[in-house]
Structure formats: C-alpha cells, structure tokens
Length: 579
Image (tube, rainbow, N blue to C red; front, top):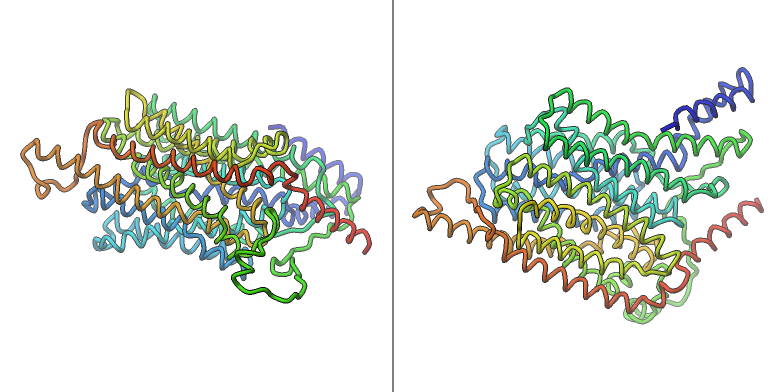
C-alpha cells in the first residue's frame, strides 16, 4: 500500500529532471499517457466488471419479488430462468461487436441494464400496476442481458491487449465480476440499509454509470514498443490487491453476521471496500510512468486497432460450404470461422459441459434464498450465503485463471482436465444441500461459489485456445448457450415443481389448499433433497463429458499453446523497427 508515495516521488523526480515549464509538461504528458494507456484501460475494466455481476444478487431480492407479487416457487424459478437466459444469450452482443466499436457496446449495455432493473424496481415497489408474469420475465431477461455487452466489450478488448497472458487476464476480470455481488451488497447496506427492494434500484444505476464513465477508456491498443518485460509480475500485484479485497469483504460479512452494525459502521466498511477497489489505479499509473521514463519523455505512439483491419486474407479458390465447414478445418489454435467452430465436435462437448455445469450452478444460485428459508435459517444468514457464494465465486475465477495458467505453462496440464475437476467439486456442493446438516449450507455456498466461478474463465480460455481470437467475440458467447437451456430444464422443469409438490404436501397435512395461502412455502430437509440429487448426477455427467475433450485435445495441450502469439509479436516488432 506504499504505491501512492512511490508514485509521487517518481513523478517529482521526472519533473525536476525536466525543470520548470518542462516539469509541468511532464505532468500533462503523464496524464495523457495514463488515460490513453493499456494499464488504465485495464483498471477501468476491473471497475466495469466489478459492477457486472448483478445477477448473482438475485438470491437477496428474489424473496421480495415472490412476496410482493404473490408468486409460487415455480413462477419465481421461471423468472430466474429468464435471468439466466438473458445472462447467457450473448450472441447478439457478440455479433454487434463484430461490426461496432467497444464504446457502442458499453453504451448499449448501460441502457439495457438500467431499463430492465428499473422496471423491476417499479413493479416490486408498486409504482406500476402489477405486471403480468411474462412482463416480469421480459424485464429480468433484458436486465440480465446487459452483462453480455459489458463482458464482450471488456473481455475481448483486454485479451487482445494482453494476448500472452489470457488465462491470467480472464481470471482477474471474471474474478472482479465474482466479487461484484459482495461489493454491491456492502454499498447497498451503507446507502439503503436493509431495504432489499432498494438493492434493485442500486444495481439499475450503478453498473450503468460505470460503463458510461469509462465508455471511451476501454479500447484495443497496439503498443508493441512499450510492453514491459515484467508484465506477469504486474498482474500478480493486481491479484494481491483483489485477494485483500476479497478477504476483507469476507471478514466484514462474517462480522456483520455476528455483530449488529450501525449505519456509521456500514458506511465505514463500504468506504474501505471502495478504497481497495480503486487501489489498482496506483499500479496502472506506476506502469504508465515507467513507460514514459523508458522512452526518455518522447511521444508514446499508441495506435488504436480496428478489429476488422487485423486480418487480410489472400484470395483462393473457395471450396464448397460442406468442405469448408466440416472437412477443411484449421488446426487447433488457429483461427476458426464461426460456423467451423460452432459445428465442431469440441464445441459440442463444451455445450454439454455448460448445460451440466453452469445449468446446475445457476439453479443452485437462484434457489439459495429459498434453500436457506426451507432449512430454517434467518434472513440475515441468507444474505451471508449470497455474500459467501460471491466471494468464493471470485476465488474460483482467480484459481481458474492464475493456477490453470501456471499448470498449463509449467506442466502442460490441460485446461479441460481442470474443468473436469471443477465439475466434480460442484457435485459435492449439490450433495451437501440434498443431505443437509447444521451449517452445511455455508459450506455448500463456498463450494458451489468456487466451482461456479471457475467454470467461466476455463470455458473462455479453452474457446480462445482451441478456436483462436479472430471471432472470439461471437464464439465465447455461443459457448455459453448450453447454460440457459440447462437452467430451464433443471430449474424450471425439475427443481421448482419438486419444491412446490413438497410444499403442497405440507399444506395437505394441515388440512389446507393452495387457495388459502398467498405464498407457497416449504419448510424441511425434504424440500430440495430429490432435486439436488438430480443436479449432482447431471453435474457428474458433465464431468465425464469433459474427459472426452481432455482425450481429444491431449496432443494440442502438450505443445506450445502460445507460440503463435509470440511469433506475431516478433513480426510486429520487426515491422515497426523497419519503419
């Protein structure tokens, strides 16, 4: 945390070296360099991703939707499915990204986010007439879809800015998304108190505001002259800050469960969270200062690259469509076309893995509030479950990014095998809910959060490694398409109806029928036992499917996955030196 003092000394030294007016010029040039540089763009990416996880807060405010609008669990799970559907149908944002700049994606995402959540807030607070079920489903789908525009704009741009550390970059960015729920939970407690309806209003305006503020900061930058040799070490500095942030939030969450916090205490903890969240800015400024010093105060040439101009393909005689898609596929790691990738066997296996892995995880997350209620946990504990899930979601994403990258580079450990292990771990979390004991939901929240978080960075990295980066904007969004289908089947068609049947049994034992109660509630261990046994079995099947991908890609991962990008980097350097 000595970064600010070091920065002040470094900037002052550079200013004195230039003397007088030139010192003022140095400050101006440093400010320009920081704002236009890759590292400030990375810092802005962290902030946007820290606001892109609003869907993980559904477990906190879903009870308000169910109670105020008089829904049963099946209807609530249907709304939860449309949340998952919106969050994972990123094909639209991917196709838009193929033809528009990043700032356009961010503005669309901000508008979509605010519109969807604001309409939900108006409905829950009865500022609008009670909406029909299909309208609530539409509002939720629109709101959740906003994160795809943020993900596409930020992830793809940052990966192209740092192509040789894609696993690490993905882990960091998705890690901040994993922390998003816990961060916004602390802010809402400080600003709105324990009014969970107001949380919906917060997640309507805050993520949208972040995207608008940094709309021109997130862009692709080709700066081959100034790439630092210690790039990976800088990423580890970002990692350490994010770990401190995660541990602090976890500690303050536990403290809030044990001790009653005053409004001042909530404000203090929220301020500390915001300070830690903005701490990476100091590292970004330090890196840009080093670039300025290394070039002897000469102008830094930063050229923005239009994606559509990166690749100039030679004209060849074109094969038939069938031959092009199915027979003339490039080698793994080369740039696939969209159709070649989508119709490949490898992608089909990834569809199965996301159906089983992400489908079961989304189902668990969406039902977390009702799981706690059915087992007799107080509302305060349910908020703790959501915070724990969010924090360990972060640790899962960081683990998938940094650890899988280290194992891949050092030991040639394939990422698909890491996915297998993560899905097997998720099975254990589902079984802890199916067969609960005292405190088991806390453990299940940690396990499911960790495994849930690890799946997306692994999935995105695998897609980029197998199919290349040329159409990554579309392909990584398409790879997630199995998860909303899994969420619908497992959440709406399996878990919700099973819960309602158990709740009806409770009413029948009391001699009542559905018409006499506004809200259908099930209390007891039996409420989720059968459904989560099904989820555990489905998740285990997904783990077996990824083993097939491990066998198919064994030879590829035994080679040098990043050789192509090192060759391209050297080529750019050679071309630049000849100018």
